[in-house]
Picture (tube, rainbow, N blue to C red):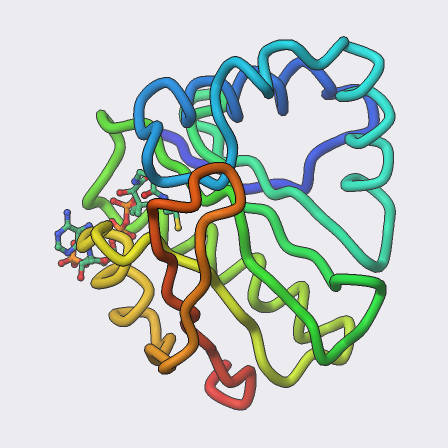
Length: 169
Ligand SMILES: CC(C)(COP(=O)(O)OP(=O)(O)OC[C@H]1O[C@@H](n2cnc3c(N)ncnc32)[C@H](O)[C@@H]1OP(=O)(O)O)[C@@H](O)C(=O)NCCC(=O)NCCS
């Protein structure tokens, strides 16, 4: 089956909306937002954001396609535009296509893009009970830190910070 990973295009607001809602619907406890909150955002919100994610040097979204259909995504951004505050976020692959290396290829694409922006250390917040994501990131070379925080959308859930050294790329 043909696979492609491409940076999102400026006209793909609906694609991003669809992927984010699919991820939140399928894995509600994996992300820092609630489905209803994201679903309530108007299409203009997605159009505005996608233009940035398609062209900015501070944030990007990468879309995974299987035979032309969007089936996964990864986000990457520099918080406040700072190279020393780089994050991978909103990582999701449709269940049918998991365990085939697609998630790894998405993260590697996002990692390489961040490294091209001059980033040396990439951060990822992962829910501490999300064993799959923790193992996934560790397999890709991310290391667990001692740093934890309460999930922004649900203070009862803790997240662990993992970090990746771009010298490994
Ligand atoms: C995490 C996620 C993106 C992984 O996507 P994927 O396409 O299955 O990942 P890959 O096939 O590239 O897996 C790479 C490696 O990660 C590890 N891994 C992935 N899924 C795993 C699982 N369920 N159990 C144990 N290890 C796992 C394995 O080492 C795997 O390599 P292998 O299949 O050769 O053993 C996917 O499971 C997902 O979308 N989960 C729901 C959303 C989520 O939790 N996102 C993370 C938010 S922080």
